Length: 507
Image (cartoon, rainbow, N blue to C red; front, top):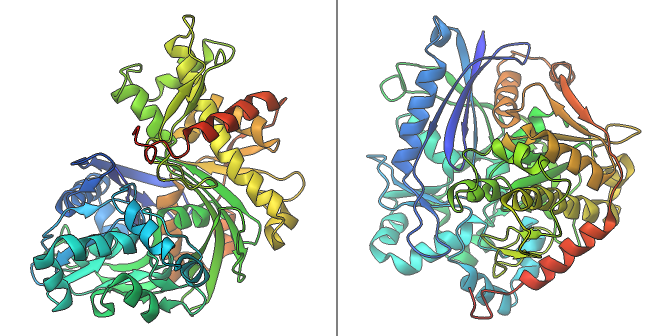
């Protein structure tokens, strides 16, 4: 038997058929449109996400007998994106407001100035930032009275991408989310493991509109064959994409960590049953909830723009034919020629957390070429991830500090995945900057793999996390070379100069 894993990412949906040995038998992929109605706004059509899900799954299931062999479904998804839909028709009266959207910057400042941030952080492990879901919902309540009336009277449901897809997959029968996704909304008490009435009141979100919180591993419903490709199978695993990647990388013990290089980059370290509180800009979050309700936590550093910076070189500047060209182009020069690129295209996440930061390029000369800019972009990604892991190490927090960045023994290693992890130059630059080995697995699509693992555990495909860990296979290990501290120093100075640019009236 096999598992259908659905990975609903920020720009498209990937579907994998995962077998019992953890390998990928087939895959499908379908993109959906992004909308940018104003500066700093990012939206998607929920129907577009659903149609991409159907297309990707149909493609993955095209192999003979694949559909008949599917025993269950696992779902992972872009987190924090706010979705509203009609409970009866499942249509969406408003575009989804994407996690990258910055329209609630002023609202976050308003709440911060009113003295709410410390309490919000104590309950959620997060901070007041437009990144998270709750302020997007508050914004909708203030700007679309008719829509919000439907929310308050129960006609419309609120949720994130996972809960929306589950509603569509089950023909509207289930309105649920898992604890990992709930923990990213600013509405979830991560200590109590439930929605917080206090936070719902603060953000003006009616609790009855929110989904039921369920374990990340466990049967939560069955697909409706009339809605989903004729299939009636259990949905048995759900997790936000970064937590799913942590699970898919077999980071099951405290201290184990991974970095996913996607649109942004996300470093997560397993902290076990302990909530580790960061004093330097990292987030405390739920990693997953077991079937018995036991919570495992993680410490997270979220970098908003990494792979998206390479896409910008391709689409915004026309410097690349495709994203993969960035490696050969960057290798054509020995260094960046003094160019430093701060890809704060949607503000800065951890550890600087400045929604008013803007992208900046320093050090341009007459001798600067597109190759120098490509190399500076790869260096920026490595610097951003280093900054997060430097904070994790400097804080010396419990099991994370004891085990090193990845908790894989001596020497420590960082496990990596995501599209940009295929860039060998970037991975070597990352190892050099971290001064620890970087390990890339054979299956790089670990977000979808984690969703499959969660579903397979729930349905008996695998008996334990030890059995799952045995399926992890190394593709390539990048050992660190010499680190030039001066380049990182120039990077930190460039970041400092980019801070607050939009607030200064120049962005």
